Length: 192
Image (cartoon, rainbow, N blue to C red; front, side):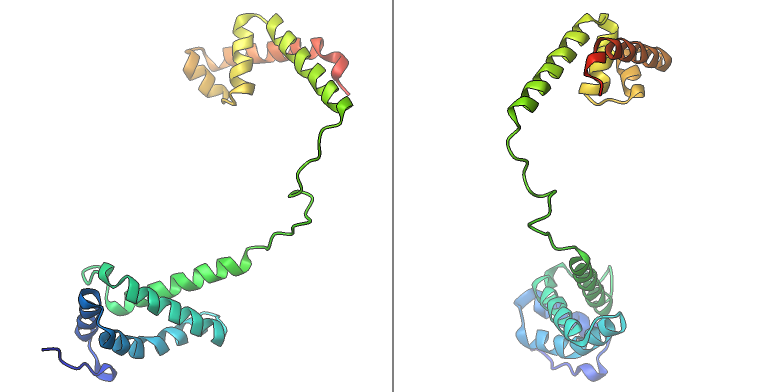
């Protein structure tokens, strides 16, 4: 037999009982009683937290809907019913604040407009540079070419290369410096 709970004088045990009934049987009367008690309090809390009355009303309703949907996940050993509900409301407010402060995308922003096709002369020049780089890397001693590939093509840190190859960090750095110096000499014609 279900007893009627009057929430004006409700105790935390009464709140737990309502949550148990909501979780176990999706008891609408229990939810209505819980909503009637906590709805206005959650709205007042949200308004004190800086929400407008309209926003607070909407967020309070969203929080209470979440209480209905997630009632089975409530654990009385973790928190009281009021703490759990107010935490949900606080999280809803944080989410709304983040959404509100996220800038809208401007469809005409040049950063979002895809680049047009590459001009033939640019594509040709890029191909020449690419070929020259490959040829310059091929002329490097193997140990320098290996360091260069790991650092620039595999995007590895110098310390990571040293650990991977078993070489001292200073050796890795000096081989890279020598390789870059040689590459710079061979690619001098492409410098602007």
